Image (cartoon, rainbow, N blue to C red):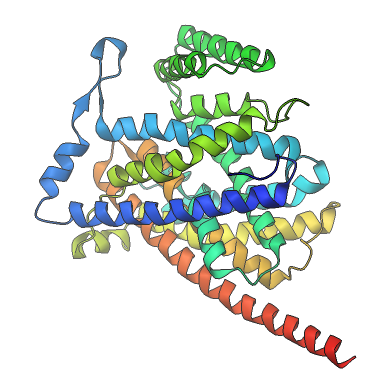
Length: 409
């Protein structure tokens, strides 16, 4: 049970962190199951399940189970992301220009540098015209989960910095999905989707709380966006951003906080793990790994996530502090920020989604790129955790010295 309103950011952030930590563990289990199943003697059953088509063809919704997980379940995940984005933009860490400067600059660097590095490493390889976008994303669940487990000795500002960075990064990744991976736009369907979204906004402003109105309306907006040629997850983000985040005087909690509290466990515990179950089942035999480490696209993905992310985040953060009013988070040294920035290389969920969107016509390259995302995300998690543990020991020693000096005086 949440004990305070949305105006209590520390408690609310702690609740968010706990939920995402558990979600990260479930996501890791689902990924392990997918990898084991896809590389077992029962791999044909896995592929058959993944490619099973269900849904009404008349509405152009005859999708495979993997597509339903990507377009449908991830729309719920992105709805929660939209709620979090709206909350941070209105009342949270990105609500003022001064607060937003550092995480937004760091997120921008964490997108631009990996994309450029991926393009350089990948050269003109088939698929690189869109695969450059794979390493731009950061997975909130895994990154915050690793920080919670390995960085507990760091000041709380480390968590605030990573959360702001991840939220701004999500906004950028959403823009990439919306603008880069939309094609053959249906203007009539776009109009229908915008009309449904406007009705949702109007109902929010009229303080309507009937779920039996919002659920069919949300499904209608999702169908319209899907039919429009825009990736259907954008429907979730759009509705999340239109949800009211400030409570009325007679409300204990704002609608966005209530919805986030109710839907987030389902998103983190079911929607994202099911997506990972379908998306992470890639070959990891000797031949597959040889392809990962010897072909341009997967090498570009790994370079972007493992090198581009930390260089971009740290470089743009340094520039922001140098030329703007932004300042380094209280209590964090540059080495602390480097340890936190390493977690930006944990791409996972959104990187796997972008891989499917960018390389769907090149199945062999897609499998290698997915394996590269998994390998780079695991490496970034382990390296980041080691750096956080080392920095945590430094902070603990400083705290012990300060306590000893206080006792002596």
